[in-house]
Structure formats: C-alpha cells, structure tokens
Image (cartoon, rainbow, N blue to C red; front, top):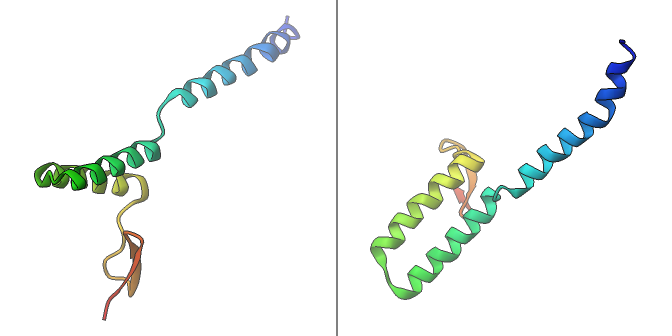
Length: 88
C-alpha cells in the first residue's frame, strides 16, 4: 500500500505546480501597471489636466514605494526619479 503513494503523487504534483504557475502568469505585472500609469500621466500633462496629474503622480509614488521601498533620506546620495540627489 505504501508503494502506491509515490505512484499517485508522481503525476499529480507536476500538474498542480503547472496550474499554479499558469495562474500566476495570468495576473498583471505590477511594473506594467506602473508603466501604464506613467503613460497616462504623460498624456494628462500634454492635455493640461493639473488636478488629475497630481492624483496620478501620488498613485505612482505609492506604487513605487510599495514595489521598491522608500529611498533613504539621510544618505549622502541616493537615486530618485532617474537622477542622483546629493546632500551637502
């Protein structure tokens, strides 16, 4: 009877893991959502919707903080928005 357990689990475990990976691949990527938000912000800036721009900027800041963490404020230099900020 105990020799039946590996024979049953051998085909079941890969199928379950494959379904799990497939389900994870269907979820939207957080970075692609962030990219779409940045493109929306660019479009809103071209149109001139200042109130909407600030709301989207706040949302983007929250997403970046959630994905990558906040930048240290007391460090001598850190990267923020693609440029290096140096404290004097």
